[in-house]
Length: 162
Image (cartoon, rainbow, N blue to C red; front, side):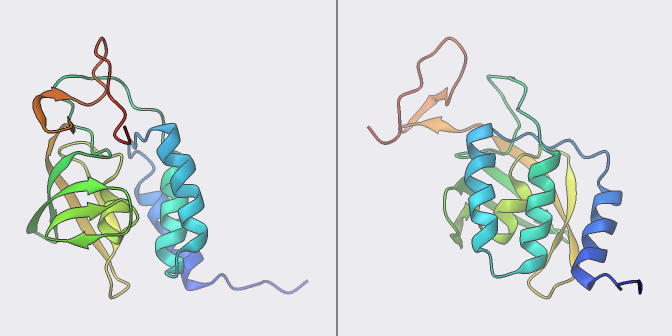
């Protein structure tokens, strides 16, 4: 049987996996299930493969409330892409505009599950892998109450949908 040359995407995913072998990624199981469905609808093959790989290496978050520095749904994140700083709140969807970062967007998918100080190589729109670094994470807030972090143990977290 003739040897099959791997595609460029497969090669990049293998390189990415090797470079990130020690990366700690923490994502809530419900988010992992949601993002597995999202992966199948992505047009960018490299982004879809890297997100699927990141989901496979993720584990359930350790609880660290209050003051949790984990980038999760509702967190406000200060991050840099190749040294240029950005700030936004992680939301569901693919939004990628001033002040919001959809977890289905290019950098939302990169940031989700990382903690302050962590960095990851992630595909830029140009296709190159660039450094995305989490600089600061502010824990999610509930229904406009700045004094209450979402999901803090010992506190009932109201459902956002009612």
